[in-house]
Image (tube, rainbow, N blue to C red; front, side, top):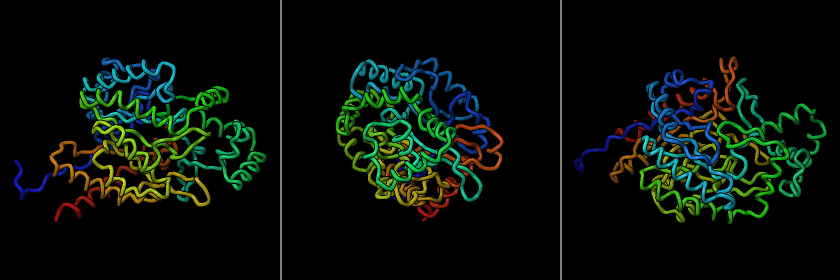
Length: 407
């Protein structure tokens, strides 16, 4: 037993890396060379909503472990649209979700990241935005979104969702855009980015939007709470931590409600589902888009429920809701303050006797740079760009850990 004079020994945060399975352009062998020790992965070949069999989980885990790595986090078990709408076969899909949780626990995989964004997962309008140093990254441009929404999709009432200046620019851009550019923008928004649950055609996307016509933020929140009140007891029973990912971007798109976008949203969620099994994936990129959010303060407030961390930064652009992916230690996220609070959260956990000290984090959405240009990668999931991010975050953590804990 530790005496009062002894200080708790705090391990470094667990450095993880997202891997999309055997078809990922970045191999497990290469990932091991980045210095990451944990893998964040999912069974992407299983249709949305269907239960994950033990055999499939065990096989995926064996591939990871045979490379000398650990399957640290599931990202994600997709939440079926019926559950989000609270309609159709929602009860069946919830029971399947419970089965997947139990089967993961049986295989020793105990953190599940998921999201509750309706229809679209994370959304960008430009996958090859050129940065001053010649690297490229992902960008969300509100004018391009308005152009697609109002003049390509032609969603009823879309114009009222944008400022007049944005609409003027969108109309001009549409008039000047070639058919090729418009098609590329459409594909970028609808085809589905890595980890997205589904891709759509224009017609199928319109149908999905129509299915949410009567669902507002209040209703979507109630459906989220109902879902979690069903699955959280199962997760608690089998020692699985559920970590909801915030909306990306953290505001409404195409008239759809977003309910995991602000500190108030997180506080409401934890009040309604008050169990340690129900926690948060703290994404500095998603929350960093909203200027009013104090990210370090959110770590202090919600730290005991943070089960997983995405560390990336965005650069908010002036004059609207546009942003692009910045280098990991630059941009709007104030990464040093966030990292400091994560280390202090570890200290609080140790002092309270918790054993989940080694919170997993992963670098996210790396730029395409250097030899990344010679290969094909999933957008945002390059090798060199993410390795640079991981190295910078590793150094930041090591320096802050020394300053905070060596005295």
